[in-house]
Amino acid sequence: HLYSQPSEGGVPPGIAMNLRLDDIPEIVLPKINLTALLYDDSVIAATEIKPYRFGYDFNMELNPSNSGKWIDLKGKERLWQLKIVSKNALALNILFHEYDVPSGCKVFIYSTDKKQVLGAFTEKNNYEHKNLATGLISGGEIIIEYVVPFGLTDIGKLNIERITHGYKKIP
Image (cartoon, rainbow, N blue to C red; front, side):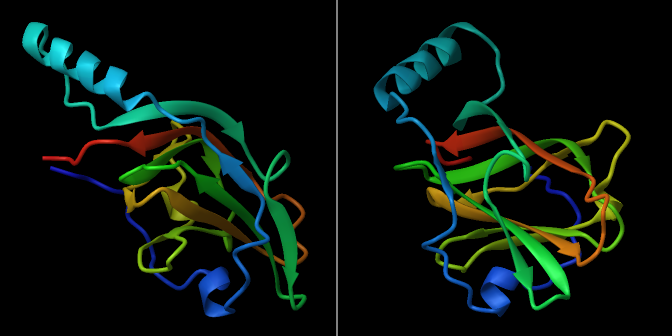
């Protein structure tokens, strides 16, 4: 069974305003060694009882202070955008650590073809453990958007701790 975080729906500003995606700063993940990973998976499956591994985890430390870009949306909101690229990924998902967003802020994640959207994640997704794991987005390129009301000085915390490059289908 797959479980995902509750979200409030909505349309990300990048899609609603038809913003250009080609000038969003990119984080390009290193190429994975698929042959080695599949071999390891077969050895583990034959010798140990472990959870099914569908992807390779890249540990990161990405947030609005050290990556991406901010833009002003007509004086009403500020928007942080970041593109994640992982060549040949079947799917990507994200683990936010220190997820603590104030009321009025929204987080969206979507495919670059704009066919899959996760979010809006809001203050209702703030948990005591400060983690937020997202569902999967098919493909190897995603956009992350963080929408902040204009004039809000405390934008909270939004740190990406892990990006998983899905290299196998989930049964």
